[in-house]
Amino acid sequence: MIRPIFALLVALALPAHAGQVQVAAAANLAAPIRKIATAFQRDTGHAAVVALGSTGKFHAQVRNGAPFEVLLAADAQTPRRLEAEGLARPGTRFTYAIGQLVLWSAQPGVVDSNADVLRKPAHGILAIADPRVAPYGAAAVETLKNLGLLSAWERNFAHAENIAQAYQFVATGNAPLGFVALSQVAEDGRILRGTGWIVPANLHAPIRQDAVLLNPGAANPAASAFLAYLRSEPARAVLRAAGYTF
Image 1 (cartoon, one colour):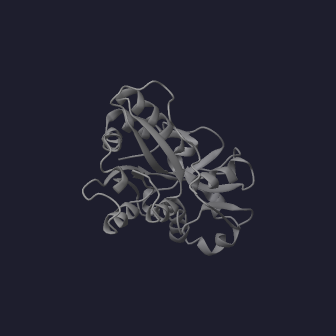
Image 2: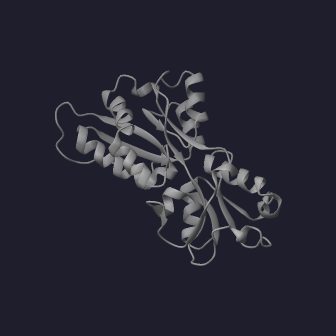
Image 3: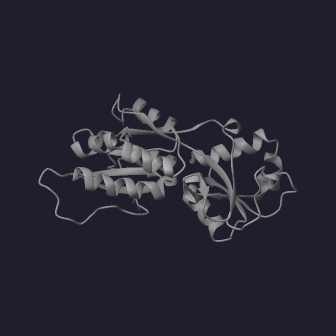
């Protein structure tokens, strides 16, 4: 059974033409998608019901018949695979954001601007999203590999189910360090709590996040409207403030 982390459905009297769209969104979008869904409902009259989770698990759920109508993935490969598998509508896929990875601690003074903490002897837990299903986790592993530090740290990994859980590990103090999405800890490029190192883009493949219209949404005007809204300046402004690039 699909258990969405949250649902966004504004309980107001909607215009007669208004519809509803079921959106599966990558866990790194937790903060901005709330704002986008609220603005979408205000501006179009349509409501978005949003489930957050790992992109890999959403892929499996869609293949098993989950009724999602739109997928906002944390990568570009999953929407492309869904197209190839005949589960998404050709020609609807586009990159809605490029994510940024950050090494983060909830405590002040732990992570410096050069991430020297990684070059010290490994100690304590390092939280990362499961790289098998979560693109941000794969980017974390690639970063450590390119720094020549993977073998030093991999025994210390705490694998989270998705990037939201990786954030929780660090935010609660269960892990002193973790690789999370910049959007989870910053606003307008400024880290709001603790300390962090924004991973340089050359240390991992771009976290290109694609959206696609899934087959159940093909006949739903609200689904197409949501994808169009995601390209609009109001939506892009929310994503930009959350630390995404384009």
